[in-house]
Image (tube, rainbow, N blue to C red; front, side, top):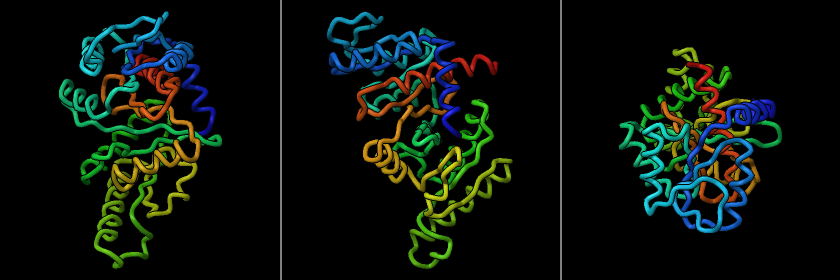
Length: 267
């Protein structure tokens, strides 16, 4: 996906201007200022403790995680963004309230190339079933967004590295299996071994597991300056995860609002 994909999301978000709730804990004047910038794309509802004077709508609560998920479940907001509250608590609350396994895909953009990366939660993508669900549901998600996805499946070595280590052998076999099953489902997927550099231009990159996926994400965003636009949870409702390491939540808010518009247009 190229830069036009991100521009199309921005246009959709501005046009829909959905009501998006965002979890806020230990806020600051700089954080509130950044959120005001995000109102270009959505009507924000701050959930938690916005502290200083704020012109935006807000709900004060000592438990922003439960309140945010409750508002989403009740349909009182069109979508939600995690904000700076605990990822573990939010994902646990989503899993419990909606009775789902939580799968996330992070949308990254750098130098005109946009792509989704998964898994990014350290406890995600641990089984073959998890990996297949990420690829199949991720592909469906991208199709909903108007993309015919090309998928790269990564593993722990080159194909010719078979026999060097039991762990590498297992990783290679699992990635080959996932890519094969995905292709059997009509998904354009390719096992690329450890050669992450060969993934450039593809739309979804599947890391070997959640730990390596999280490390790739942090390296790209925090060390290499890639633009992170949030990580949608693959569920019926609209929920976009957002790293607490960031100061600006404009990207995740924009993505959530755009997803609301896309979901409505597909119904």
